[in-house]
Image (cartoon, rainbow, N blue to C red):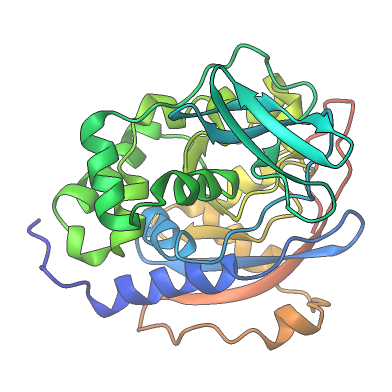
Length: 312
């Protein structure tokens, strides 16, 4: 199918939904977090159009790192994990080899995002190719390393099986329908698929693609709060660990060609206590064939057993 040069109305609408949901703040443990059921006639391109919008939203960094924390930051021409150290009584520093970043305690925020304590120590780093560096500088400007660091520290996460299908859909949008995407989102989405599907690479890339069971073998990942979580099927949402990324806003795609997604309508039908911010959130008007429903779910502490029950 030949794609039009300019994004059609339905594509713009889906991207705007991703933006508006990603603008919502993170939700503390014990409270009800915003969720959106997005019903579409086909799931084609939907995940990446939502990601296109979400990557345009303001970044959300975790609480400020403190002395002794390990943070993911740009240093020595790469994105890597570095310990925050005390340089003197009023100065923190991040240093490796001859590269250093520093600031005043209580005045300058330590950059980066705190890495969960059980994250593998040898997970490597991200160093862009010369060609990719030129492209990022063209889009983000001369401070592109800091912009890239912040984008990766507040990633968009796609949850679903069928990674090859997702890869092909993303490649088609980036390569063929480039004008459908925001310029900054487009370059952020142009990443190596194998790397973005590796949970140990989170915070090195602006987006990630995981299976619903990712937390079973990577328990520590539940402590990270993405900018937006996009779940490609209702059944995947039900299979997820209830504490996995539960503080982040989520969009669950209900492709009406998939029969199991029909359950989503019934299971979100009851009256929801949406809270003031989410209740007042105005979503873009959907074209014919697309509709959405707000719902909420509880932000849970990580579980220590194999309980896979999901809570609404």
